[in-house]
Image (cartoon, rainbow, N blue to C red; front, side, top):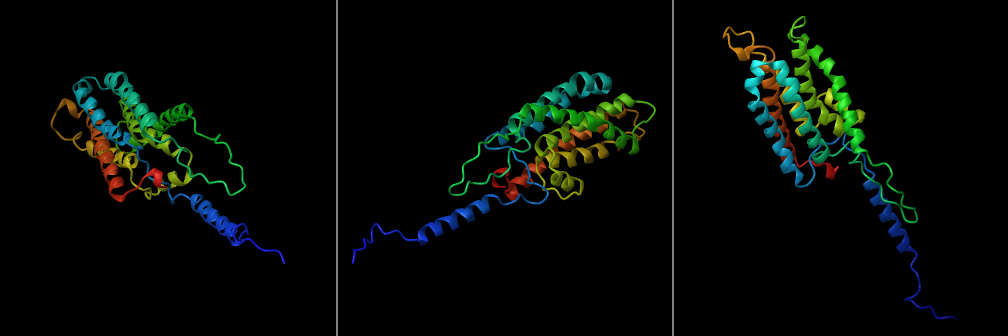
Length: 260
């Protein structure tokens, strides 16, 4: 009877255990994202730079505020909008994750070939599409402002430029980070989206625009009461407060894109 070497003899249960463990890890990695999408946070140390963006935008607006009172159309079109567009593009491209970059990847199973990553999002294309969608969203925002009491037959250009400021501040980061994720947009429309700096900025800017319209009908006879100076002021102040508020809530709750 041949002798059996216990050292070289293979144990059939070991591969089964390894396969079972690998399957569990793969299932864990392929777990779906939370409902309504995950909140978006600037990755790594760049979050400190991102935190300074709303303050910088507010400082630029305060610096140009006197010119805005004197000539709203020229100041918005030639100074405020170009400056804010450059800041928002830098903020999105450098400090925010582009839509599709945070999708969880599934680890290959034992014996399965690892597929090459060919579906990475194109940052330049995402930026251009986000800017285009921001421009497309401006007329609907203009119409909503008219429904809320903005001048209809007069000051049309004033209202359009004000709507463009609101769209650029609030919707451009959302288009860039959410992309075509239907669940994320449904959550935003249903007011069930988790709060982050972009969502907080959207809520704060809209509330600030509504609050900024309060001084306009008051009988104070001040130059800064002209349309849309106070509304635009409310947009920028509300955006900064909402952005920092959303960032604070995100920190407190411990949400992060890297954990999703």
